[in-house]
Structure formats: C-alpha cells, structure tokens
Image (cartoon, rainbow, N blue to C red; front, side, top):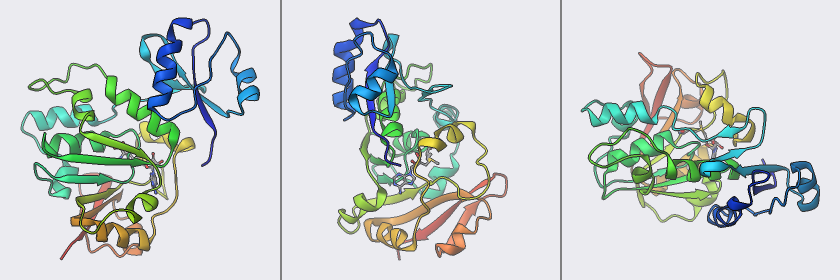
Length: 265
Ligand SMILES: C[S@@+](CC[C@H](N)C(=O)[O-])C[C@H]1O[C@@H](n2cnc3c(N)ncnc32)[C@H](O)[C@@H]1O
C-alpha cells in the first residue's frame, strides 16, 4: 500500500529534534519538525498521511490507537532455546549452516531474520526485504536498540541485527536484480491468505503490510537466485503449497504452520 509517511518528534520535546532528523535520514523517511504543532496540522502542511513519532528514550512508534511499536515477538524465546542447545523448526527446515547467506523476502518485524542471523553465525549474512516502509522503519530502529536480558557470550538482539541488511522493496524487484545462485536460502513468510494467523503480533502489522499473494513466477525467480533451497512458511495443509507447485513440505504435525520446500537439484 502506498502511504505517505513522515517522522516527527513528540510534542514539546525540542531536545529530540536533532536525533529525530538523523533517525529519519537513516531510515530514509522524510523528517517533519514538530514545532509544537498538532499532527493534523503537520499532515496538511506536509502531505503526510501517517507519522512515525520519536518519543522520550528513543522509542519510535507509529501513530494510532493503540500505536504500533516494534517488538521481538517469538525471537527471544527461540533464541534462548537455541542458545541452550535446542532446535528451531525454521532453521531445521532451511538446513541452515554457519556462514550461509540468506535472503528473507518478507521480513515483517524480523523474528525469523534474527533467528536466522543467529544460525548463520558471525560469517553469515542475512538480507531482509520488507515492502512496507512503515514496518521496515519500525523494525530497523527497534531491533537495533532493543535492550533485554538475552545475552549469550555477549550476543543480544542489536548484535544480531548487525548481521542484517534491510531493504525496503518488493521481493520481485529485488530478486530480478540478483545473479543466479547468489544466496544459499531464499525464504518467504507472506501474510497468510486464508484464516487468521495465530499471532496478535502479526495481526497488528496487517493494516500496513503487503498482502499480495506469491506467484509461480516469483518462486521460479527465487529458485534461480537460490543456491540450495527456497522455503515458504504457510498454514499447515495450505492450498498455497499445491498452487505454487511446492515439491515437499515439513512440519505442521504439532504446529499450525508448515514449511514448503523447493530444493535445487
Ligand atoms: C507474516 S509477515 C513476516 C513475519 C516475519 N517472518 C517474522 O518472523 O517476523 C509478512 C511481511 O512480509 C511483507 N511482505 C509481504 N509480501 C512481500 C513482498 N512481496 N515483498 C516484500 N515484503 C513483503 C509484509 O509487508 C509483512 O510485513
């Protein structure tokens, strides 16, 4: 969806202005000085439809009732499990190895991307794509400054986030420009087409998210770009696996989601 977004600061917080302008530049979002004005006035004056608002303590939120803020979702429990020697269903389905290069075509709030960043280790690389500028900006800012007790050999979310390179774009536009076999794994986790996803976190993104269905030609393009495997997360038993000519799927026995897999031969 094409929404004109802008970034401003909370009202009566002139001390946030320099940071706000720098943050807006780093997130590639236009900056609008607040100057004590109400959001309605700013919208009219600058042609902005939705504002990201920088608040005290560096918190960034999307205006709304309730406002939308980045959160790590299931990333923390999954990372803790991995750090304690457990397994993660996505990493298993990816067959991820240290040093791998992963292209996450549907980053959202980036739980999967952060878990994959853990899996590939220091020598690996994750490129994460997000079509929605609002979601991309909240994620990029949020995961880079998240403070939490998760700390394993000095690693925490901001350290993992440094392994991510985020681009705000449609997956199809990015894939088209990539050479053959340039990523070990190409991953899709689109908004589910049918049924309600069992995650309030994902549902909060829905009004701003891209909800286009994947196409067979997009999967073919992903297969061209992948060295080992293309993966699709969907509802277990989803018709999408058949429609997109997925060769096999794993998971779904003890979970509501499954992973469709296309292996490179
Ligand atoms: C279900 S969420 C992804 C959740 C993510 N895997 C996680 O772990 O947090 C899907 C996200 O992908 C984005 N998206 C959907 N289709 C896309 C496309 N074709 N290109 C880029 N982003 C897309 C949506 O805007 C949404 O933010």
